[in-house]
Amino acid sequence: MGTAFDGNAGVGVNRIMRSVFAVSFLSAFLAAGLAGAAQCPHNPDALGTSRVLVIDPNEHSLLGSMQYRETLPLADREVVLTFDDGPLAPYTTRILEMLAAECVKATYFLVGRMARSNPELVRRIYNEGHTVGTHSQNHPFTFHRMSVEKAAREIEDGFESARAALGDPNAVAPFFRIPGLLRAEGVEEYLSSRGYMTWSADVPGDDWLRISADEVAKRTIQRLEAKGKGVVLLHDIQAKTVLALPKILQELKARGFRVVHVVPSTADRPKTVTAPEQWLVAGARPRPKKPWPQVLASTTVAERAELPAPGLQSFVLTLPDGSRAATPQLPPRASRSVIARAEVPLPPLPPWPRRVDTAEVTADPDLPAPSADTFAVNRPVSADGALFPVSLRASVDPPVTGSVARPAKKRAKPATATAAPPKSLRAIFSSQTPPKPPAAIRARPRTPDSKPVTTSSLRPD
Ligand SMILES: [Zn+2]
Image (cartoon, rainbow, N blue to C red; front, side):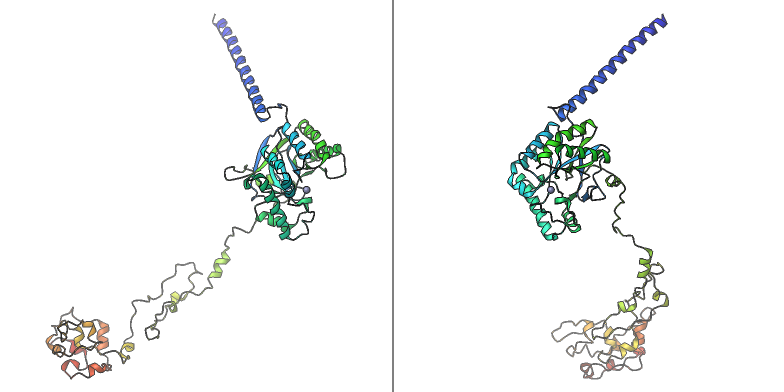
């Protein structure tokens, strides 16, 4: 019973699982069909566009293995279709129709003069989802030997013509292909400096040669097979290209190639993340790294040790009379090159406060001789009763009043241990050769105050 039950249960489970698988498979099939229909609704069997590759023109300025070391980072069996020299009816129109029938997106390199003549075709190319780059204004075959200034004019005029046809500067991709692929370094540098990406190609279709349409298709496919992937160069102004394209698209589909649509990155359309080596053409060496950012070598630091260590000259003060204040000798330790030893520099002797040489002060004949009055607590009174600040008494000659002539002995205070004047002052006052007082002071009547001051006279009575 138990076994029978288990057996029945097992059959039930198998049926359920089979149903689940069937539903899942159907869902996946329907989803794939819907996706295909959404991508190319009128042609479920279309070649289609497998993916969009967003690239930053400022990161890779030169593309195409025919001439450069880098090309688009395509996977195996991936193809990018490009058409030069148009637009020109009816060829451009026919090619647009064929690409639309297969839901294939391509990149166009328009000639400015052609865009001026056929602006409606430029708009159709853009509106059908293709990328619009440029191919100079007049398509001269002299880019390899013309001046950069002239090439720049051709380049800018070509972009301006395409932008004018579309009425939107942002609608034109910063992609440029040099006419005839006649590259020149100055031109490439100019293009790069302007943020334009220079496109060469990987697979030439030879549709500009005197060969049949079948030969164009044959060479294109053979070269693609040989490389396994790449950027195909064709022209949408040739009858043979129009005739060759159905065969090329058919072969691409039959051989399992997938078409990639390339667009430039913008602020709201980030670039497709790729590895640098994906851009390298097989066998090409990577471009040498730019000398930036630079790393400071240890020798650079050592060279700085030759710079003079800051000395006291940096801190010398200039006195009002133009002379320089005396500076003590630099201690031996501070004179070493501190940077060479990677030490924190010791400060030199502080520029302030500075010890003043007594002889310097006493040698100045213009300075008034301090007297006991200088340190008097009572201030002098002028004729109108205003008080003179004490500090002015030595330099300003106040009106002679009775208070000025007051004997200093009466204002002297008893001596205490804390009342002793600073050592430097005592040194000044004990000088053996006191300077002469100013004339105004000398003219005063001699009083006990105006006698040469000695240390003992500061002593209170
Ligand atoms: Zn061309």
